Length: 419
Ligand SMILES: *Cc1c(COP(=O)(O)O)cnc(C)c1O
Picture (tube, helix red, strand yellow):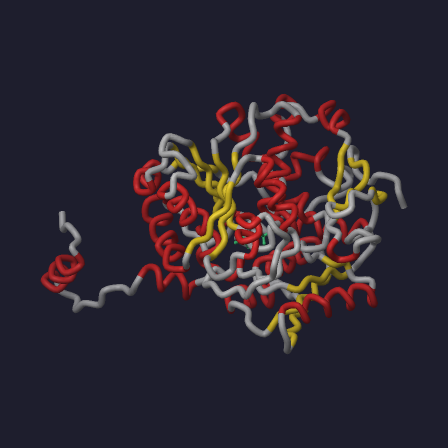
């Protein structure tokens, strides 16, 4: 089937070999196999005809407002959950603490299942319905899975989740609550990923793995479209994003680039990609200029603990095009970032959700980002997703007898002012 299903899509292009692939139910490049990540292409004259500042004003305040730039039929009924158009807050006290010029947070923990991944899963369930699948599957330890389970529940299709043995409990609980079939695979993440792909092939399930699914990144790019629309001509100098597989930063870069092309913003913000110190294969590839070498991935930031990322080419291309950079941060600084982002910005993020704040601090200290520049950090996941790390960052409550003197003593010990 080669006829475009959405208004302005044209075809897909392999990011490895450049081959054009007809628009339809595809995953990776038929010539290159799983390494050949496909990118959806659009006719931007077609987009510009109907997607204007004026026309956008009257549209729904969610990510479906960018219908021309999504690979989803504009006519089909969308999930009812509210996705995207997440708030942007200016946070001057956090800016001062980090030494940033102006600082903004975009809180994507506000999405329905509390992470950025809802942007991708919502597009994936639409594609599943469009292609006639009644079941959608993915292999994930975390937010991609809980998000897919929630979005599947909202449109009434079944989800099957392949979990490697090590997965954070709150996220597993989300899966079970939404009624996903949760299968723990006794093996590595790679084995769970391969089993998911085989099952999808054999049973006709739709595969949502954003490493290989070309439509997920289109959902993720809506954060870039929103940043462009929310800031317009005062678009920040830098956009900071935590990086695991690379699909998120690659998508945000694509969205910003499209909005530059369409004249919504006057220039491209630079992208800063942030990985954890002990899970930094894409930072290594950025620094060495060579192909990616898989590494181990040990970090409290489970959502970016990816040793074998699949979208690293897309991530690096986006970062380089923007004149951006990459940086790695140790876990201790990620825990600090949980604290300061909450206390000085009012936003509670999970470790991967605030890793960008930790990366920003390092980037300012090392001179990569100037102290007069404006910065937006995307907070990619809500803090309640990982209570153990939050407790490590925040400490324990004080326990006292029910007497005013004990209260005074305890506050004094903490160094807190009383009046
Ligand atoms: C998935 C995820 C990321 C990183 O996205 P990639 O596409 O894997 O680079 C960052 N933060 C959170 C909270 C995530 O769930």
